[in-house]
Image (cartoon, rainbow, N blue to C red; front, side):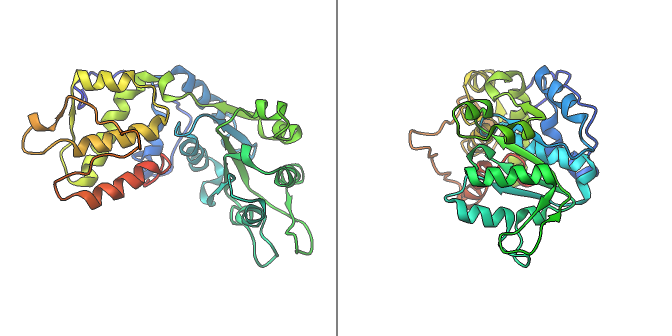
Length: 304
């Protein structure tokens, strides 16, 4: 039984990811692997075949579905786990700063790809990569070398590349916005992650997990969600996916008082207004709320 008063159903057990320590097994990374959705079981089996290789992997899906979370799982469960996990946001304001961040400027001023040596580089929103940098990334994948613009010579580099895209790269190629040859390199192992509205059977599990997690962080008892409030959560389309759900659960914690069990019961879900704002709590916990809300807007795997 969970805090929703519902009996737990068997989860999809990937059986292929062995996270290296207890802390990681108890984190959101391990938790996110559990699902009642059979499509995710197929994704886990697919990427389980290449955990210990350096084959590029592409995760496609809407914002907030867990692409970075799963990328960190792949890194933590594979041979690269002892190396760094380096994140690069490809949706930069301009090409030049992103080029320096990725590839560095000189042999002395190296970029994120150099930092990822022996580990994994995760390219967020790879669909936004400018054409010139798409070409340089293609050369990296083809030749396994990197050359700094003002450096002396190309050198071999050992890393695993995982990319994520909110857009369908096949459509981006057809529209002429993404190189077809780079597309072929990145999609050797492509995994499409379903949005939360297509895995509604997982919503009670997420509610239970995040309610307990945020309540513990706030030093509060977790709220109790009634059948009515849970039905509201399951009926919502969740355009922000799991990240949006986390925020709603956090706000629900502060919409209840803590004096007794009845007052911790959530009958009505607290949704954001048209400006995306929530009412401030009136119990002296506003600073903690702000901190937790910032965490809730961050990637799913934050604070693990």
